[in-house]
Length: 156
Image 1 (cartoon, rainbow, N blue to C red):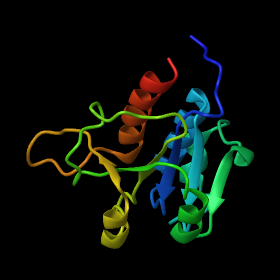
Image 2 (image 1 turned 90 degrees about the vertical axis):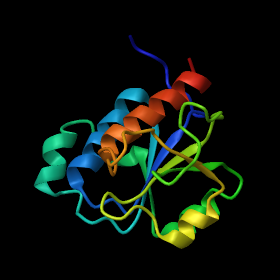
Image 3 (image 1 turned 30 degrees about the vertical axis):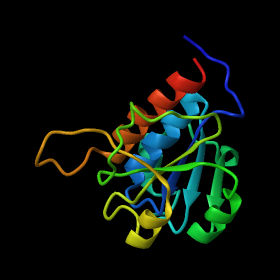
């Protein structure tokens, strides 16, 4: 089934991603679902990295990805928008959260999440419930799960 994209749909933002294959998989997901992608630099890899290119294949359109020099610049650009942090430390589950058109879903680094100061400054936080004693899901998997619920609530 194909779906028209909307400019008011959700966005995914990646905070300093450090695993090229995960970022490439998220690029593909965004491309297929019509979701905008934002990357907060610095990245832990170059976009010409062979591991990135192998996964992203022909889904990469650099013109559809917005890059931010750092989190401060990202934060200034989103001052009038809701930024929702996906974190294992959240109390609210992603399915109970009420998404709005234009939300930005923020995902931290694979290796370390987001800094504690940033975590504390973000009002909205959601999690994917998991079994006890499990640390986290793969970043690309988490992004796909949460973006799907956001799209279900706001677009479909």
